[in-house]
Length: 275
Image: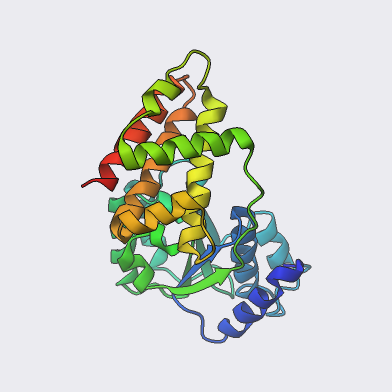
């Protein structure tokens, strides 16, 4: 963790090491920054010098993803299913193989299916000698509240969002107008050659940007202000889940019609706004 903006994070983690929480939730930052912080935590709890030196065999193994006591479940590869949690549960009841701690890292923990999250909660209620859990998520609101309540939350500096393209901004204005009025969207999205996968993903990225700015207390645009005015926290989470479902559909190995996906998203979000 050598970047200047993460130096204070490493200081906090070093202080936490003396009395480590069973569950550490890292939010904010970028995906790579959250992963970097989680690996630093794993090194701290397994380093031969206790300082995450980066040079001892344990630190090198953590960095290379080869440490026997560091387990990573990666939500970027798909939803984290309950069977995965069940398969690991017997291991959680055992002591670590080495002299440090077992560290279980959930990358993109918002991809935990509800049954998986509940299975993890049940695991946390049972003795897990020498085992620490790390949840990584863009923001805590994307996780089950019961998981968050069991966690020590550490917020990384929120990432800088580059300006959106003029084309994306125009699509977001149309999306926002549809959420308010229910009009105009389908005529625009169904125009010949208007919609493709890249544009659909840019719309989703723009919506997520607004949501992230809103939840992190930064100045959101008009779409973010609309979300804040119309949606409570539970429906904001559903709004975010809708983005995930649409993005997953667009990235399926078998090509799908981006018009159908983005029109479903617009309709679903309109329904959330007007319930």
